[in-house]
Image (cartoon, rainbow, N blue to C red; front, side, top):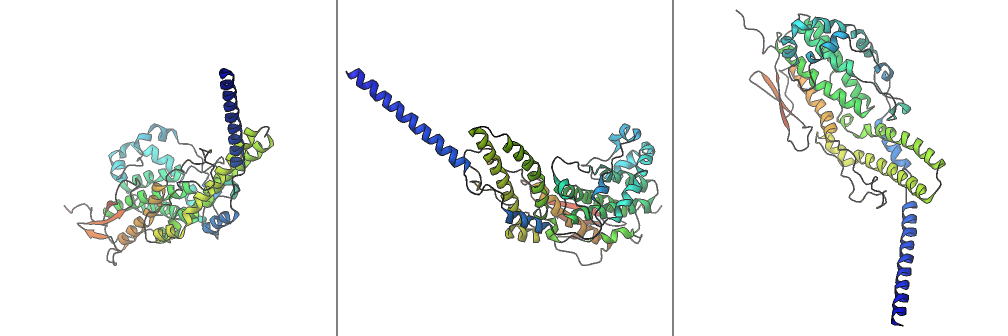
Length: 388
């Protein structure tokens, strides 16, 4: 009899556990499926679009799709091209000058295509071109052009070398001003850093009174708000949203079970949370910091607003964008420096100084664990060969 009671108690206990488990699963399903506000906020989308601002003039984004392959000479001499980390491309090319004629000849053939880009006022993708699966310009022709400019300078084509650099700098500035794609803006910002450095090294070997290319007149500093990540977030949102919406439509048509419905709900949460995180870059406190040239990024929520606790993918942090914001902010540091090199007698901005034939200033570090980094560029005429 005792055994029977024990068995009945055990059965009752098991039934209770099963009922509780079923209740938990049902609650979990509804908690997951009907999590509030799982549709992207149309107001946030409109705010991101407004932050990008309209552009006026002639859009040259399609003309950026320059696809000429590297010549045989370039492929054979790829180790002779200045690397991204090379800080003195002029000295590097000078050390390999005898091996450069064939490489330079191939690069000269692309100069007309780069000159053609000057007719455009801005470069911004169409809405459908933001899709992460869409083709993107490579920018490699523009990035490699500094090798030709350096070779021309050491070979005596001084004016052509300077004009080429000022042209590329103007194109880089227009790319950033376009507030089109994040990738294009960051590439352009890095191009400006490298090309201002190379131009300063060229001018150091010339008399201070040597004329500047008229194309350099365009190289004024940009409004600080154009260097924020905020106006680039609309493009980032479209790039994520467009392929995601296509997938959601496919999954919706194939839903056959509760598991499928939960997966679909999870995907919607990811989309909505992604928009919410991107909108944080346009918060007033972030934009105010950017106006002061301070690198500040939004904090991700400890408890993501639109993510179910059972949706781990939704809770993953976005990639850190510290290096992107640092690179964009540094654009004006280098454009300020270029203005000083053109007129060293003008009043110096704060945090810039002239000392021992060099212009000293600081730049934001691309690694967040590092402090502000010192930069020194040679002044015009400071490296002229001594008279015999």
